[in-house]
Length: 176
Image 1 (spheres, rainbow, N blue to C red):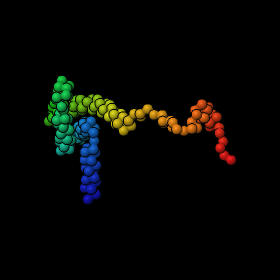
Image 2: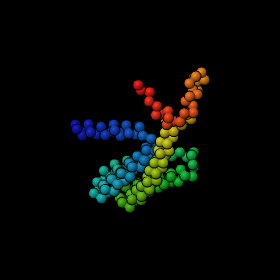
Image 3: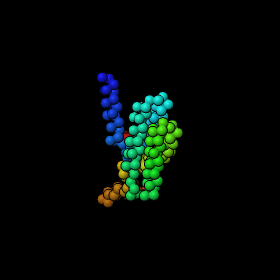
Image 4: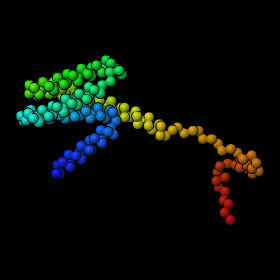
């Protein structure tokens, strides 16, 4: 019973994290899922656990598939085409690694995805930094220049304080 409660709590935490995450963070999470599961697939290949390896491979494939779906080809077609090709090649290497029981094929996919994830981490950092700066500008608008308070024209004593040095005005003692 405790394992089910723990599993449900973990699932709820992950769902909450995903629902509240910035889109750049979600892409980063997908890279991590793919990388973690490829590392698990390599470990399961070494200890000959075919079912666990199949599960890890499926999770890695799902993450890469989501990365493919996240591509917006209308923004920068040559760049997204290159990314799509890298994802397709990674997917081919994952399938080959599983079908041929090839650690080398898994490592090729892992190398590509790790490089892309590292680059994406930098993109994410810059995007979030720019958004933070933009939010700070919105939250703290520039101060308007101070406007001098209007002089009271009808003050009969105003002439006495106009030409007084600041030190003299500050040193007055009006106590009795």
